[in-house]
Image (tube, rainbow, N blue to C red; front, side, top):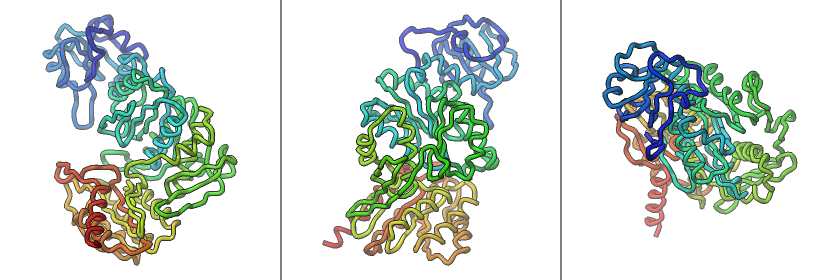
Length: 495
């Protein structure tokens, strides 16, 4: 865990100043040096938060934490502790962690303009668009999301799209120390559910869209729960930008406590998108559109990138950025694994993170707009995840691609062949042509070796991920790299 550094100390009272709590033992004037929620990281002077998870209960590690030197314990069960330590009771240790972490790092989010993005699709791409627009306008920006954290040009790995609240606040502190004017972050439904963003409020929030996803035993019970957590972001911000075109719009905004501004193609949108035009040139796929009469051009293809850009521009309007700067930024923006053009010549090769039916359908529909000779879709599905996703992705690819190449994704603790069998159940509802190539490397090579002029090959599902997870082990694998190897091999053979 990161500490405050040196001999800095902070009182328990200061850490708890924005929380309701009950003192079970000791004094809130107790001074501590580090804030810890993993008993293995307790050191002399720590305050230890006991978080009750679905698989583990930290309360059972209280003796271990005290032995390691904890001076205070925060509990969400009224346990008896014999040792001479301060014991604080709170209703939710996770919520307490968020507020205490903010206090621990001296509320760094309050020292920047904060922007949070949520939605089923578009978060990562839109966050990078916002970052590029603001940077081109001369602002210093920190970013946290699916692809990790970026602070002053330095990249940090993160375990989750929305890290735990303590890690978030430590990143915010780094951003402030680096002189950042803005903090932009992706906010996942799990992040909202687990109180990871409870310790501060957003100046601006963006809700891109919503459709069924992340529903399963370890995620959300059903779509209603998923939606309920997603829309909480509109209770954690001052101004919320919401996609007016989304079919669930009314449900999304019904409990919003912020000012709501809408964007989209709907005539009811405050910021209206019109005149979408698909652009294709030598080695180039892009899109242009008008936003309330302002002409925007994006160096990324497809309708959804027009909507992502419209969302990004809408959020940046508060910063009074010129149209010239916006278009300069959107000509530069690139996002690893999000409609990433790996090759554009006689045929195109694109890598995209689309890993559910909705995003795959949107991806394939987008690429159809560019009239390929054949649209070839390489994809698999993750193991130990919903089978419904497999059926639906199989059906979508069968309907929309000229050829589906079914292969491995992150099989985790399932057999690739079993996952492929599930995908084929969905595929069987269509007349789509497909081949099975379980080895993902071989599948990518097969497509590139057999590509014809005018084809677009899209490698879907993993995007920026640089690994394949098999039987609990992550093996290095990056779709972009494998595609380039196959392209290099093809070029050498042609000489």
